[in-house]
Amino acid sequence: MSAVVDAPVRLEPLTPATDARLLAAVLALDPGPDQERYCMPASRTYPPASADPQRVPFAVVLAPRGAGPGAATPVGFGVLDRRGHLEHLLDDPARGLLLRAFYVDRAHQGRGYGAAAARAARGLAHAVEPAAQLLVLCVHTSNAAGLRAYGRAGFVDTGGRWQPSAADPQVVMAAALQPPARRRPGR
Ligand SMILES: CC(C)(COP(=O)(O)OP(=O)(O)OC[C@H]1O[C@@H](n2cnc3c(N)ncnc32)[C@H](O)[C@@H]1OP(=O)(O)O)[C@@H](O)C(=O)NCCC(=O)NCCS
Figure 1 (spheres, rainbow, N blue to C red):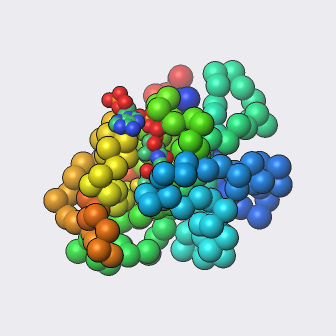
Figure 2: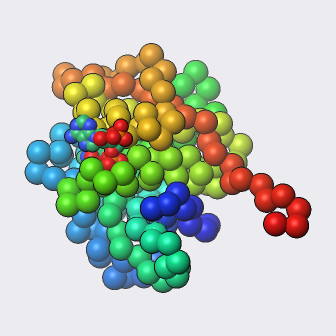
């Protein structure tokens, strides 16, 4: 599966073939000490995701203009899940994929990478599951940065709420998957 780019970031699916240095750098990314109530670090979420054929873990890497495919500074992480708790979020779970475990490293937050990566995740989801129609996610009502970033990326509040524990409820958001733009003949 190839990478999906939404400048300034590129999403790189993490597979057994992933460069060990890139993977180690991804596993060191940290959402921030005050943010773990919203998202656990990749060091905790990557191992189960990589062992589950239903999930596609990915790195968010910086994609500066003109940089070659080998240049990769990871700034974030996420997982696409074909199953997860989709049955509780969609009438027809087969229509959707779940975006989960998604975050930007604390040192890189607030620079537009989260919104760009969430938008690019719609393209990666299409590459993973072309028959699906929606990318779905859950975000805590108190997570102002998350709500804003996902809104920027084209996700809308479905009106659904997910509350697996007594903690603050989560807003269910969804966006259409984004097939790659078609090139016009001769371009
Ligand atoms: C949520 C998160 C992914 C957003 O990524 P980011 O790179 O920090 O966000 P961006 O720089 O793309 O900003 C997106 C929007 O959010 C706004 N924003 C950023 N931080 C904010 C904050 N603390 N409070 C309110 N709005 C904030 C930005 O101003 C921007 O809005 P604008 O485009 O209208 O100016 C990131 O902050 C993060 O990983 N947080 C910790 C873990 C987490 O919450 N993960 C998501 C779980 S659902």
